[in-house]
Amino acid sequence: MSETAVASEVRPAALRGRLLAFGLAALIAVVDLWSKQAVFSTVSEGERQPVFEGHDWLMLTAVRNPGVMWGALPQAAHLLPWLRAAAAVVVIVMLCGTHPRARTTLVALGLVLGGAVGNVYDGFVLHSVRDFILVDLDIPVFDPFPVFNVADSAICVGVALLALGMLFERERPAPT
Image 1 (cartoon, rainbow, N blue to C red):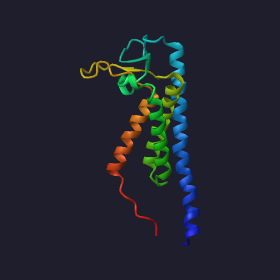
Image 2: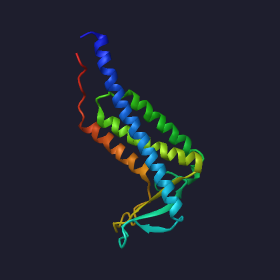
Image 3: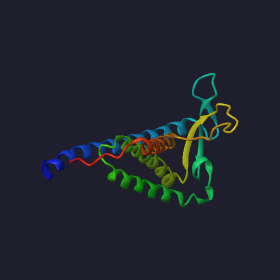
Image 4: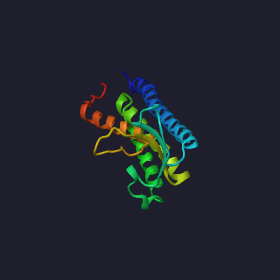
C-alpha cells in the first residue's frame, strides 16, 4: 500500500477520534457550566437540599472554592486559573498526539479537558470554582465527602481511565 493510501486511511480515523474527544470535552464543559448555574440560581450558599426527598445522603449545596481540590491552597487563588489553563493546554497537546485508535485515551483526555474548561471558566470569571454536589454516606474518613461538581467528576473519571489505559492497553505495532 502506498504512503498516500495509508495517510488517507488514517486521516478520517484521526479526525473522528479527535472529534470524539473534543466533542466530549465540549459536552462536559456545557453540562458543568449549566449545572453550576442551575444550582447556584436555586440554592443559597451554604444551604443543603436533598436530591431525593427523605434521603440526605445526596444533597445539593452552593459552595465557592477559591483553592484547589477540597479547598486547599486558597492563598494561591490568583494563580490557579492560569495553572488550570496551562494544564488544559497540556491536555490538548496530549490529545492531538494520541493515536486515533486509542479510544480509551481519547475519551479520558476529553473528560479531563471538559472538566478543566469548566473550572478554568469559573476561575477566571468568578475567581473561585463553584461546587454543589454533597455526598454523605457516613464513612468516618469522609464525613461528609468534600463538595464537588460535574467538572471534578469528569476529571477524576478521565484520570482513572488514563491510569487504567496505561496499565491495560498494549502498545500497538505500526501498520505495515
